[in-house]
Image (tube, rainbow, N blue to C red):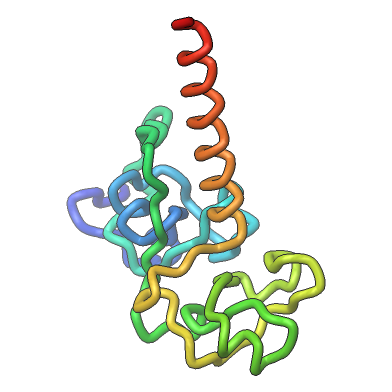
Length: 157
């Protein structure tokens, strides 16, 4: 017998994916039991200690509603070391730029010829930082918006 009236004591039941913590807890859709990014859809990370409970998942998760303006991830825990992982050509460059957040710690999530450096002075939450995947998605959305506007303007002539 599983008592569903109380939260699970298994902490892994509360690991959920999202573009940010708020996204993860508002949807409670993608469970990441191993705590790894590999359990999450592309562009999302696994957040620990969410109020979501994997035992309560039923049916298909609802997709997030599309937005015109991009969403920015909020760190799981403000003091998490992952908030200080940024891309750069070297550690000093990453410190100065504070431009591309790489919470996975992987160089693969940085622009070409840049590496992911830990423990920078940068802080993802304070800087409203974006990952490279989020920046690329934002560019695609902007391009699509421009193309749609150009097409509607051309059709009106």
